[in-house]
Length: 325
Image (cartoon, rainbow, N blue to C red; front, side, top):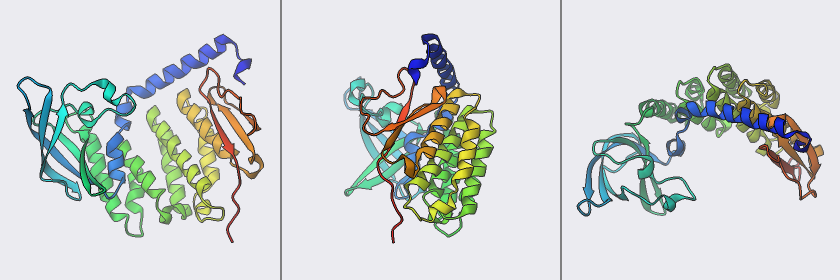
């Protein structure tokens, strides 16, 4: 598909995507919560506000230090009243080249710094991890969103989902995203057509925002709703609770988004959703969002180059599940 384009056309498409992603990056930090998101989503993870109360160098002038971290206030469960961490103030960047930077690279240790700590247990060992710097710009906003989500999530153990549905309109992206993912995990929502409509309506409101990251967030919600339906066994109640047509309609509307990167992601999600039908068993689809084009091809076609100089993706359908008796 891309081979039909001239080098000038390809350059123009690449440049337009560079500008679109630059727009998304300008406010991306407000939408990136990393380890805090995971900690909040896992209900068996304890969370608290703590403070670095002391930094002790193991040798005068050395970079190896011991941090003393003290509890200020628990947010969920209980975090140790005080614990210590060993770290190096000048770590070798090669030590995390294949993964995310460690906590004390993301959060620079300073005496008096307030942080949010996630505490979890694995195989009998307790691990405490700093997941949010409250002295950082935007830290207090994320904390406020986290506390509102925790309040809504604490009530969702009951049959009702009203507070989580209200959280879909929270001003903090963190709280909104957590609420959507919790709702999609709950049978009381995914088997209820009204709950599904409420999530689609919340996505539609975000799609009307002037902030490109809001619109991108809505596309992610719609894609995940579609994934939930497709992952369910045929005949599962999720397939009636989460209707695909409203999801398709919102994605189709967003393909023409004024930020072409958001439009690309909507096109990718829509094409993947539409490809998931019985007639495509034994086939794959190459999707090149930048030119709003896709092409179906046999699974046996192993040498295909996906996307060429433009970002593309592929999806294959190997079998079709039938309803269980």
